[in-house]
Each structure stands twice: as structure tokens, then as C-alpha cells.
Amino acid sequence: MRVNARLDGESQRQLEYLQEATGSGVSDVLKASLAHYYSAVRADRAPKLTHLLACIGKSGSGRSDVSVRVKELLTDSTAAKHSGRRGERQRVRGAE
Image (cartoon, rainbow, N blue to C red; front, side, top):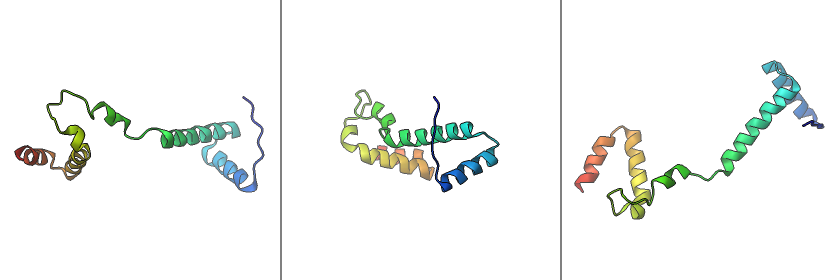
């Protein structure tokens, strides 16, 4: 696809800077910029936490309270993971 665009002064300076900094031509800078912008927009529009859908509410976990306590369990698990005491945290939970 061929593109014809008018750039204001600031956009022109940015394009020229990117060309000089990367040693790339106009087409390559615009392609890289488009790819970067596309990725950012896709990430913003993507459903959040979709990887958790495979775990939450599925049968066979052996626990009957997961769907009711999902936020608490995830918070506890994340806190334990980041504190480096995951095994200790699980032993305390199991004793309750």
C-alpha cells in the first residue's frame, strides 16, 4: 500500500530524529511506528486476565469454595508469591 501523508512541523522533526537515530528510511520508521502503535492499541483493547478463565470455576480442583473466594485466593496467592513465603502461606491456609 502506498501512503501519502502531510506532517506538521513537530511530526516532521520526530520522523527525522527517528531516521537519524535508527539509520532507517522513512518507510521503515513509519512501519515500525505503526507496528508499535498497533500493539499498544491491541493490548489496551484485549480482555484482561483471560488466562485466569481457564482456572476459575472449573470442576475437579477438589475445593468447593473457589468460585466464592476467588478474589481472596488470588490476592493471598499473589501476596505469598511476592513475599517469598508461598509454602509458609499455604501451610497456614491449610491449617484453617
